[in-house]
Length: 151
Image 1 (cartoon, rainbow, N blue to C red):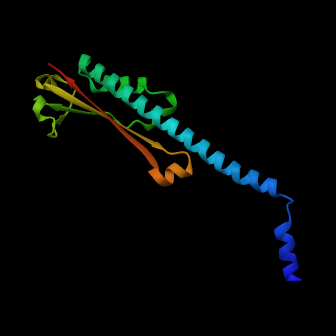
Image 2 (image 1 turned 60 degrees about the horizontal axis):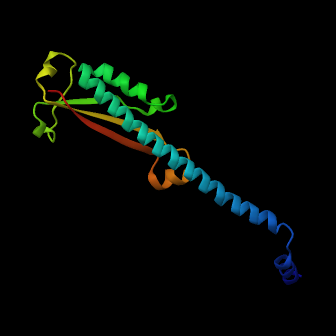
Image 3 (image 1 turned 180 degrees about the horizontal axis):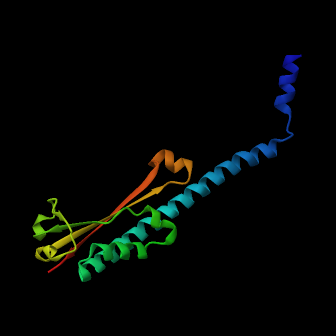
């Protein structure tokens, strides 16, 4: 009795199209979601690079850290403004001292003696889909940096 049931089950073709569709749909949806995630990641990286460039232009003109942060936020799309961490501006007395830590920009006359400023913008974004999250980590972290000559 048991053998006959197993043979009949192996020959049955009812529902095979539904099973094929289910497996192929899972693969296609997974590939689509991964492609969407990759597109968002590339867009976010380019937006962060544009934002740090705008902050660099603003800081070179005004020497005001607040205005530079506002310029970076204005450049980012509204949906991604939550991912931007506070802008870090380090002042260096000489261009050869960029490897050192420098000092934090104050936005006052003490910054006038510096030769260059290094702006660093960090963007953190939680990944949306499970496969990139598992392979690449929970968050996308992109750091944009620019060096601005002040004199």
